[in-house]
View 1 (cartoon, helix red, strand yellow):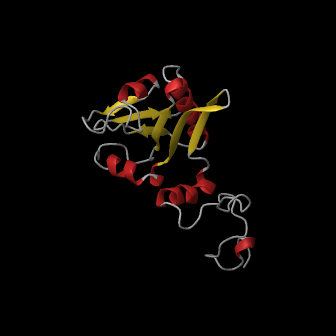
View 2: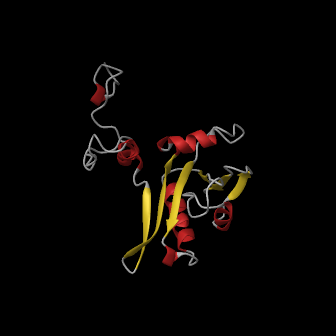
View 3: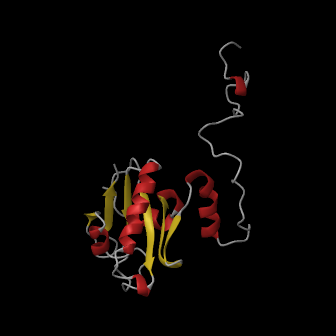
Length: 174
């Protein structure tokens, strides 16, 4: 058949040998055990396609700030919270930051804001147009993994849904 995709041969539904949009085989193996916690398996499954889902900021070789982020599809709880607000844009879906945590010694130094800025740059390079965060206002400040609205405002996010339980903070990426 003239003009057919050479890797696919004559079968139009065959998978080509080379797919430039698929992750490469090297580095795609998993070190996560099949009996590992489900969240760890879920995050690992997307790692080869998406890349890292977390960042750690070190100060003097010691961890000071940790943040967890990724595509909305990797975080079922974030998806459930987002579904509470049907007026949020459905396309394109944002990336989410689900956790920002600092050590006690690192608080008040702007380090968490620096890691969020780095995540924004990283996600923009990966093609995302927005980031959302869903602070849990039902928890005490030190128990909540997604910080408080004031933190997100200082990071340049906007309050797009003002809710007494789960406000939605959003940052457009350019």
